[in-house]
Length: 155
Image (cartoon, rainbow, N blue to C red):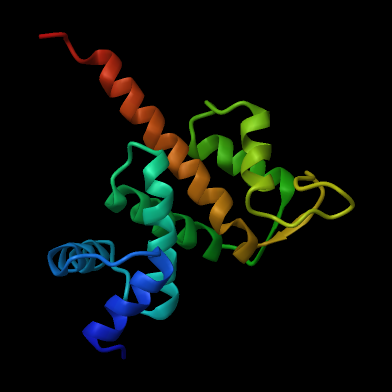
């Protein structure tokens, strides 16, 4: 088990800058709320998510929840065929993303085989798909935010 100061230093090392004690305690609360243990791997993941958060309107808690959900999804099956993954991604995102968007999620997450990142006949390891499903869940959360803003009445 990491001591609190060591965990904070490890996070800062991967985040690339120091954070205040109050930010650190808020971050720990978010981790607890999302049922993520404070491990080296989780701290590195959250640092990367926090860096990625700069490019999205989602809160860090929403990003972490997306990541946790994605990890749970891929643990359901060890090896998943490409066409099954594609259908599951469409189901999870309510058929909203274009095929090109889904393939881009693979390009950002999976190593190519024979020059292809996605192939409906390819068998994918569950671990390979964590980032793909996280991208899909973030897409869905962003779409929900956009939809919510469209329905807001101007003051």
